[in-house]
Length: 430
Image (cartoon, helix red, strand yellow):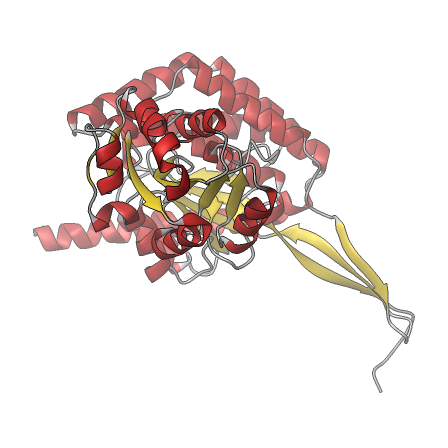
């Protein structure tokens, strides 16, 4: 067999595997959509218990992924996203339990009204159907996405990154144990069993009509590919070019506390601050302490000329820095001429993900919240609250930055659609 023939055979095999996965997901989606709240919650609680029981095995599998990533030269931020320990696994389990405790999003009566002819109409929430989730690095997404889709009555096909293959495979096995404990079909939560990139291409084609929506969660190149090639709707999750704007009436101690947390709590998450903007009105009092707290903790700062003058450790920023999602201990810093300039900078260079203003001026805060067109805008709070769990959603599949259907943390409510139920008494249309 020639290399060309071998490649064709491999592609054919992947296509066959993905076709079977799609058909199985569609078949299970009907049963899952009709499952009771108690049944779904029983599956979730059993899955959470299985995660805790198999924590040592998951950690061992994760060690293989981390070792391979280290050998491949992965960055510190990527390794942080990939790494699992007992604490993080327990957090995954608690997240699933939190999802189980939330109200069932399926079957909610969203609106009711009666027409003059006596027809009684109600809008009721329904599952989306079959959801494909394509993600990189973070194995916890396996648990979050699987649990959220299950609770919302959707079958899900998970395609994790090759770098988290071993970790995600074992986490998926725990989710399947939960399904079996509640007598739900195994195919309600499936994971793509191959690292072959052709599997992503098959998902983007829609799996012969068996995939209803795709959620990409990863780097810019992944999201761009999904948006360009997908033949099914996409919940877009673009990069998080996140800003913290320190206004001219910001409390300095609060600003330092918020900035430190927003940037350094975890540098590799999409809610981590990537650009610091400081009003020139307080540059002489606020800028140096803000830069110092970052620099002293090993964060590289790339700033404009004013920032460089305030601290000699700041290196010169380029235009590219204003549009960069670092996902590591690097931040850009710039002085702006008040709120208008801050908003203009965010609109020009931001990604409509998450942005924050620190100020004691209520009017300016309200202007910022109203005029900054991002999925999440905050006043006097760390941008690292950009998380479905922190919003009370139990968990999230991602932060959607588009404007259709879902925006912000994609939790249970965003994983449902609706239909109309119409009740009559023999009416016909004239």
